[in-house]
Amino acid sequence: MKVPAIVALLASVALAASSAPQLARAAAAPPTLSAPLPAAIKSRGNLVVGVKCDYPPFGFIDASGKHAGFEIDIVRRLAWYAFGSDDKVDLECVTGPNRIPYITSGRVDYVVSILSYTPDRAKIIGFSSPYFDSGIKMLVPKSSAIKDWGDIRGKTVTTTSGGTQSIWLSKCMPKVKQLLFDNTADSLAALKQGRAVAFPQDMTLLVGITSKDPSLKIVGHSVARGPIGIGMKLDNKAAAAWADAAVADMVKHDFLWTTLTTWVPKGDLGQFEKSVPRPGAPKISYEEAADIYKCD
Image 1: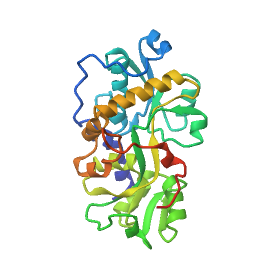
Image 2: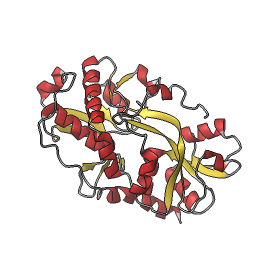
Image 3: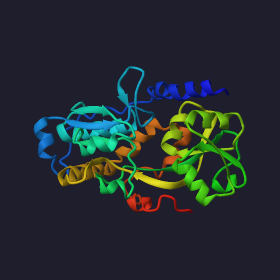
Image 4: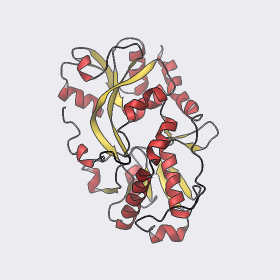
């Protein structure tokens, strides 16, 4: 497959994901959370939240021009907790580089945008309890016999230069040959052309690709894990307590898994069984990110 075709594939993921079934709007009155809504937000009458707008199926603009995705469902749930209506929220599109400045400047109350916890980030902003456990897995052709990381020893994989996945491979699997590119489209093209046996990348990106391309599948256990939480100002204890209470209620009612299943292709759901906290399941801890490049 030529590179332009790969670019078209990535661009079309949002259109495909927009057809994912939507959760029914919350009709009942919201529960009373264990922490009160911060006074400044309550007096304003709505939430202001930074979200991804180009990252299907987590946060993107769908074919009708509306915000959609797994994290958008979470944000609308937050609005329902706060004001009894999932429309009581202003959604601000954010990018990787500007997410933290949006928080520290007070432009948004919260950020819900694939924001992975790291010890360095935790010195600058606050994090809620994790609502997702991300990490690196591999994308391979559907017919591939590769099942886990041990199967790529001595083989060639493709990935992006300078990324977490490339650094982890260099440290933990030095005998794996890396075919490096500056962008996802070129890496994906190399995989489709048979120049590499696998494409290691963050699982949140890979699921967007497999949702559109049934010739590919996600394999391998998660490495270089970085749990994801809601970001807010570091010194805003009220905002942190309310966000924690909201996540706890989502876990209690298994909301996170329920909405995730509407966005992740059925064939990939098994790869995500431990990606969200669930009732009675082991908790997801930020301790996993203390040494993101550990080998296992």
